[in-house]
Length: 247
Ligand SMILES: [Zn+2]
Image (tube, rainbow, N blue to C red):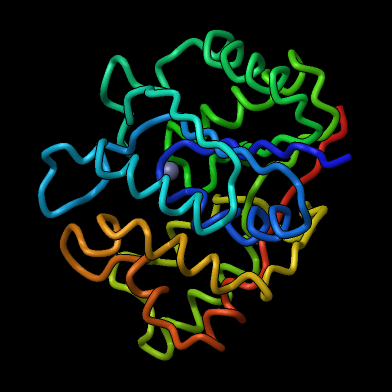
């Protein structure tokens, strides 16, 4: 019997950077992969902000197709932006309300695994911290047996950023100091998933989010990663990290 894995994300393109390889790998193994996105990412950067939410939904559907997802659900909460502004935003929604909606979906899907984010919300975005709390409560409500918190090995990340800075390869919007309290230390990681075989799908997922690769000023992280030659891309983006909790 195939199993169902539900990937919770805060914004369109978070799936591409954090869990795309794992999703493609599970889908290729015949598992049912469901993507749930809390907001439309309308506070993201873009050259033109008109209908950005709609555009980002379309980009997410294209990304999900590239990864082999069986279903995509948009919860439609407001994108708080990095400063946590808007009153109707996901991060301002009561945790139990949002968790109830997700728990209903987990029950409907009979999910045996759900993913969320680490307690720091990765790099500290208020919607990501909220997703950590909402995901944990939803998994308990639905009695989903396994919760995986998607994260990054912070020690590895800091070493990589400092090396890139020494070689003057770092994107202009990336500074190592910003990440000192981000994600989790390497010692906390329980699962390092090798997704090198799914690098092409992961790259397609990232490329689908074109509004975030080209919009805004300066060199964007997504754009910089997409410019990496294929062998380097496989090396840099060939691992995804999780902290597992059995419920
Ligand atoms: Zn996000």
